[in-house]
Length: 153
Image 1 (spheres, one colour):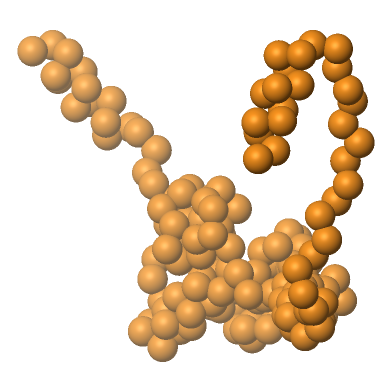
Image 2: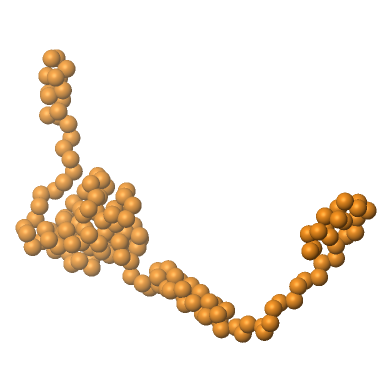
């Protein structure tokens, strides 16, 4: 009983979950849309709007703060890319090194298709292929020679 009372008393002093007050509906919709474009630093492939991690909640609070301050969407994206690099964007622009990352798989597919087509168009030599000649060592064991002769038939 004492533990229950003590637990209830301490629960009132526990730190609250991070989170800022919601904005008016049009600005909150902007916050959510921007949150869908930014990558959660703790989760694999999730946006900060979809993640429940404390880091994602803190970043959503920062987005909310920047929207409330009147920043444009591009200024908010630039804020996060200046701090975390292009990795912070879930869909980075296809320019510079990112362009190579986007185009390399396409180039490999085209190159592989070209190699397959070139191999398929090669003319097939007429007639059966000649049998390769193999110099077989001779042995002094008559039994082994008899088995080899039987196998050749």
